[in-house]
Length: 244
Ligand SMILES: C[S@@+](CC[C@H](N)C(=O)[O-])C[C@H]1O[C@@H](n2cnc3c(N)ncnc32)[C@H](O)[C@@H]1O
Image 1: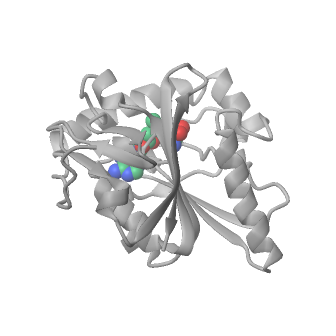
Image 2: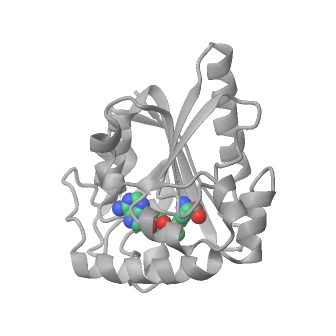
């Protein structure tokens, strides 16, 4: 990895964010009422879009905490209209909170009221504002799927995750590799992510790279970062990170 810096990247400007919001809502207006979404998010016990290893990992943490007499507290940030983790905690004592800055707009898009009631819907909160909303050490697991690279400042979002995650708790990140390049740096697609050397690396349009392992040395441990193919065939990457 080249040019790791410790400084924060600039937060994206409002013009890009507005364009991103418009196209994101345009996408969800159709997808939220499509048969794959209704089937996977509302009808299936296990959402087939959720990565197997992440499903098993979070369930495992839940069972361990339950065995110790504790509930597992999970955050799904940038969840979209309904959390992909909505039905992941069958027979596990768990509390799931979903957040998304577009939560109010998403609420208006639902046409299927049965499905709307079955999923865990987000409360309004950007990833950059999680600490103010939830306070320190609120969650055992903070999960973000296909959304870290949609934020205005992904390094601030990771700082916020670290703040709201309990010590020895976990941050779970996954998403398409280098989607900003693929989407030609339009709208919400202003950051690339990829994994190398057991680290997740975030790259801005200027080319500056921010490796999580280097940025947050001594604060987090990367348990595992990986690349693989998403079931769409596109490159996908993920990381499971422990807060020290
Ligand atoms: C491609 S969707 C992914 C939704 C869901 N996580 C999934 O995997 O289906 C990206 C989401 O990131 C959200 N997002 C945009 N800016 C964000 C921010 N600053 N903090 C958290 N989420 C954000 C968008 O509103 C959108 O719902």
